[in-house]
Length: 268
Image: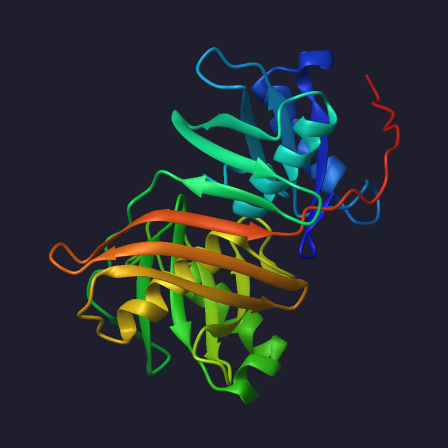
């Protein structure tokens, strides 16, 4: 499956019963783009007593991504195809998320409430750290820089590995304003994939929040931004409270598409 080009291997672990350690070991093999299926990560649907199901997501290298927005949207569509209702709930790392699935798109509602902090300076540019279910940094670039993917990979790798600033590492989002005030171009260097991906859902939310904060907002209200990624458009929305400078009601919407079904043979 893919969500705006962010691609995943997806399976229902209610059928197989793999242990987490087995999933972690299997993930790099499945995600290898020459010797496996090829993907940015693996999505696993598991039973849950607190929601309709539990989502496990591992990066392509087997590491824990935290939350994956596009993955959550894809797994929600997969769950509906597997018999779950079109409005459903799921657990990720002890947090409960809601999702709505329709013909054209899938929306996920995030329980996190990011609070924008102080700006950093990275490569002589403003940057802002935002937690949107997992760790992100947003930095603003011009259109020419955004087109230079070799440079973005180099700078993304550098920022992602700055242990003095980000001990756990971080995802790095390069943002550029579009002509419309409610549209933002974005490219993301993803931790655990260790490369640029065609889209990033939690990165889109982080970029929308960071962009709104950079405008020095004074008024409370609801806001929405379209995040233009290499693989497609992701829609974001949230509510802003100026007194606490924090964000609630985060929503991520966009495409979630099946590309093929197949069989992978394990060497046991």
